[in-house]
Amino acid sequence: MANTSVGFGVVLIVLGVAGYFATGGQSPTALIPTGVGLLLVLLGFLARKPRLRMHAMHGAALVGLVGFAGSVGGLGQLVKMIAGETIARPPAAIARSVMAVLCLAFVALTVRSFIAARSARRKASSSPAASA
Image (cartoon, rainbow, N blue to C red):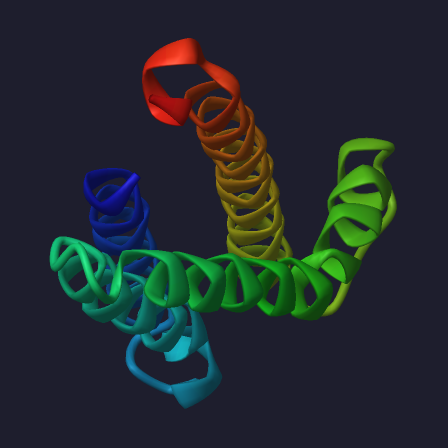
């Protein structure tokens, strides 16, 4: 999961930088995905250390959840834009929507990983070899 965190982080960094330059560098808020991405990359690298893995990945899941919560409003704007309505900042709606989808996918993957890890720990602790 550490590599997954780094991968999603890199994609968010690219999204933020691309969004910033697509707006002609006029909107510093376009770099918000870059900030979220940097945190995911940092936590992904920390999660490569076994003693920090659990805490780093829980932190990464929290960052992903906050990233989703902060960008999910873009999905509504994107739907309006697709329906033909005029919205204030179409590139922002697209970037926020992409960020929301990426963050939601990341959180889903981390939750799935947490469930699998807990199941594996339970299975290992209840096996006959563990009690011997």
